[in-house]
Image: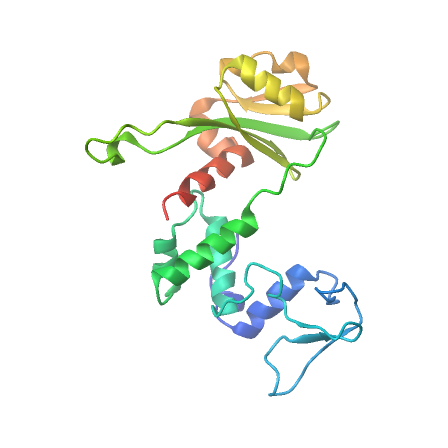
Length: 248
């Protein structure tokens, strides 16, 4: 993620507000978050807090943070912008403790609040019906095991059970992630057939479970396992951030 940490939006409230407004209203026209009307105006003057809009139709007031994960927060927008950047740029995610230290937040409670809100904003939406991929599109498949480590178990406690999770990521598109009973060829092929259009190009690692992909899809790209950390793509990075979220 090539964003200069010296960018004004990470240090100046007005620049950060302008950035978030541009993200929420890309066409430059703010619309009411209560009724959807575009007949709104920005309130000026010292009697109003910066960035406040009012709708001329429903008379409701709102800012860029209203009905967002930043709503009802006293954390400066510049720190929110930097927090989003750090979470997105970190390959393995970032813990609340690290967020507190690097952003200079006053307490762990504040850092935890911010981190959980950012993760909520980054969370996967409910799976829409239908298959992902299609003609001319590439879908990546990867699997991992989620669970605690044996070395972290307290004396006398049982070793935590690992749970298999399988993810399918359409490049530039939708994601399918679900718990699976195991990572055998039968289980993975069934999950892929259910969620991926057969006209897609499938990209996987070199596990034997994916051996027959070339017969079932338009094309099958293989990434050698020892190169997967740099080449596997979105599916593997998705798992990396999910693992980091458990460390806060």
